[in-house]
Length: 118
Image (cartoon, rainbow, N blue to C red; front, side):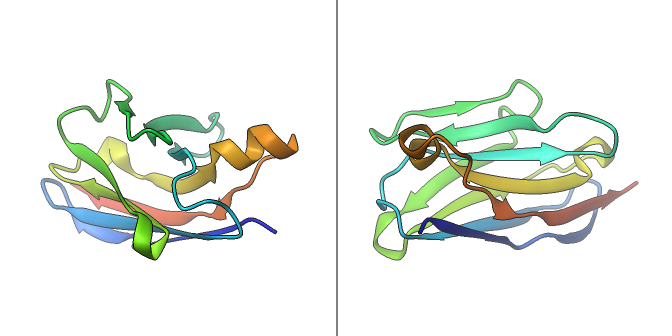
């Protein structure tokens, strides 16, 4: 059973930094993983992905400020967030994209709240 756990959220002032962690089990350590975020009454948006081959993609809204990386030995994917803005306030989720495609259902970690104060 594929399971993911997102952690590392919190309250930070604008301009600050946070690093989120997505720890997975039950899937390959090199599966494609995506970080998403969601604010109330809006759809969940994808903000960063790392593929099985290590290719990385960012949404324009976070490009240059967020960095996704992987520690395959620990089965952890990180999202380093810098120069945070109040607009980055959201619940952040990670998803095992590969397993979701293989099994035909989405595998999400529980969300972690990030709040950026102005």
